[in-house]
Length: 128
Image (cartoon, rainbow, N blue to C red):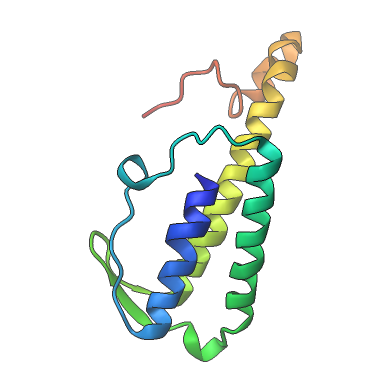
């Protein structure tokens, strides 16, 4: 998913803003890459190369670029600044998800302290 976002979503959308174009919606279920069977090291290297290219693109942006408008087909009018905030939030959300996954064995085994981890405990049903 992170590879797809780096390949097809965030840099492509930033380039669309810079070109004064709107961009299509991204549907990961329909457009996402499926399991390619590649080893994690290969996938990590591919992500690192794509992220390096994204950072080069971001380094070219200026404060004057932030209010550039575009239209998202579902969300409507958006700015480049909003896209960049969403990109950072998206990355951090996945960092939090990874952290929560790593916490599960410790949460499960911490006995009476488990209640203190309710917000992070996968076994606790969260309200919809």
